[in-house]
Every structure is written in C-alpha cells, then in structure tokens.
Length: 272
Image (cartoon, rainbow, N blue to C red; front, side, top):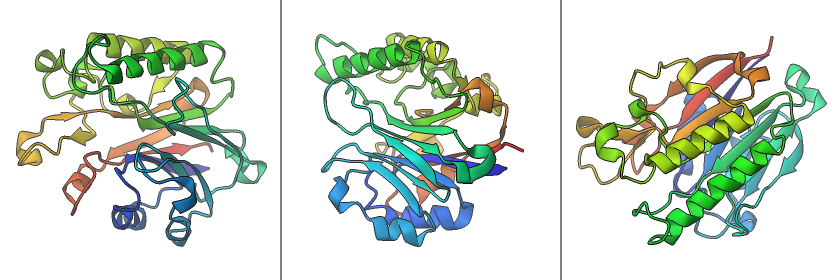
C-alpha cells in the first residue's frame, strides 16, 4: 500500500487556501499536515478541505496564532491533542489510522509546531526562547517515557530547528542565530535518540548536501540569495522508516503568489 504524506507550514490556512488547493491538485497527497493555520476551531474552512477530497479532518486551532491540522483521504479512528508547557497554544494534533485502511491500520501520524523562539538565543533575556527550550524538554521527556509506543509512527511538522550543518546556508554565521544554536540542535539530537526517530528526509539527501525548506520573507530575491534553512521535518519510527520510497521539497511553492515562507515537504511510503 502506497501513500503520500505532506507537511507544510501554511502561515494562515484561510489566507492561503488557494495555494493549498493548487498544491493538492498537482501532487495529490493522501495526508496533508499543516502548521500555523491561525484559525480557531469553530471557523475552520471545512467545506474547502472536503472539496479537495479530504473527508477525514482533525485540527487544533486558536484565533490568529499557531494551530495545526491533518487532512486525510483515509479514515482514522483516533484523534489526540497534546498541550505543552501548559500554554494552550495549539501546537500538536495526532491521528491513528483505522482498520479500514488495511496495511496502514494502527499507524499514527503526529503533526507538531515547535515554537520559533524569537530573536535572542538567551532564555534569561528572551521569554520566547525560554519557552522553546522548555517545549523541547517536555518533548524529550515524552519520548523517553516510552513514546512512540506504537510500532509505526510518523512525526512531521515545522520543528523550527535546522539540526545539521548542511541544513543552513552558513553553519558558521548561524551558530548564534535561533534555530541553529548548539543548545537547540543538541536538544533535537537527544529527542530523536530518545524516540528512536529516523530522519526520513536525510535518507534521500545525504548529510553532506544542502537541504532547505524555508526562505525568509526578508530576502528581496530569495532565489538568488538562497539563504535557506531546513526547519520542516519528517521523522518515522524504525518500524516504518524503511518503507519510505521518495521525498520531495517543492521549493517552487515559495515563489507562488503571496506564498508561505515554508515549502511543502512530501514523503511517499509503501507498506506493500
């Protein structure tokens, strides 16, 4: 059984629904995970999502900020939302596929939006960075408690950390920049080890090659500058990581009209 999972920080699902529709029509993901949906649950554009063929929808939102959603063409029988740091800021939602999905049954998909952390990489001077570090500590503890207990789990999202040297345009210049500081990258490495996660994207692009998913709005010409970072990730538990067959970052989406600053990342799995 082959299925495609896409993760994309959309930076307002209502503002950019046209871009979502354009992407879905061209690439036909079976599961689409969005971050920064920026809409409270009661105002989620369900009719637009269903019109794209996603009949199974889970979301965790709030007014104007954050928010995550999972759109699926395949049925799921469980939805969970985890709150981190007692903030109530809508940064996680997960689903588990039901028996009707055949070989996919029992597989869990987690959609996560880790805090960006502000501009100053000092928790004593920057509450946003302190929040990010606390969030990472809670994730680490969650993973160490036995998660993912499921035999098959996929974790995707805007994790707001570029962990490897080739995940940023300049390792040396970004060592003191939030998203690539040693305290963040080392925390991510510990989390991955604690959850026994496999970095699926890097199974297709070696660690020695550049790989970006985000380009700042601040660049007048983002293509020419190409000062990107890999902030968006796809991880899988060992039981399913080997089923990944392809991975693609649709960088061209960054150049669409009124785009998100993130590009969609798609991984195809084959459970045959």
